[in-house]
Image (cartoon, rainbow, N blue to C red):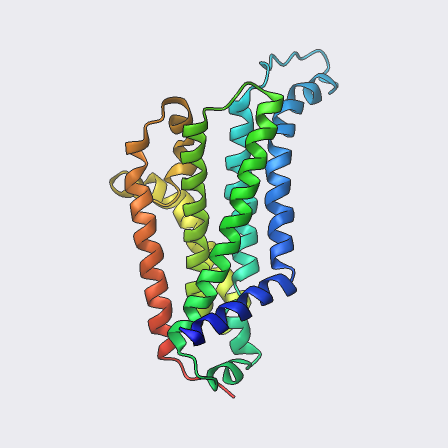
Length: 256
């Protein structure tokens, strides 16, 4: 346990020193604030566009438009920033040949991978939840109040989706020799989650991206039971990817 805590402190400091925490705060904070602002401003933007007599009948924006912007931005910008920020979690250390220094200490390879997972997941979760709170209060100040319970569920499901993407990235970072390869493979799998898997009816309900496609049903009706298969499937994927990362890294030789 002492070895794990040492590695956890090391990873936490690395995330702070490398500006990863700052970048997470900037991106997630920007999405949280800009989403309701964009939703509120869209009608005014179209009114000021010279359309040569063409009239756009755009209804007054509501909190639903702000939610649309939030989900779209988180599923795009949030996904991209997580992949490219954490694609080098392990692969970068292998390419720089710094693993030997760490592995000579009294720590296990399992602790090494778990420390990467725990530290990164913690900061992703804290920053995302903080941005979700900002979005909630800012949206309520611009529109009518959101349903707090349904929005809480949406926040939880979006977070699990992002953590699944992170675990995909961590796994490919473990088996890849470079950050570019890890990012590329992670991006391909993420695209499969958000597109191809969602169109296969027999498994679409279990896709980690189910919430991205069906969040309106959750916010409108609070049909929580429809989202549980995807939620639990995502948790299983996270555990499996973490286990595969540990097994894969345990079998690798550390290059000098």
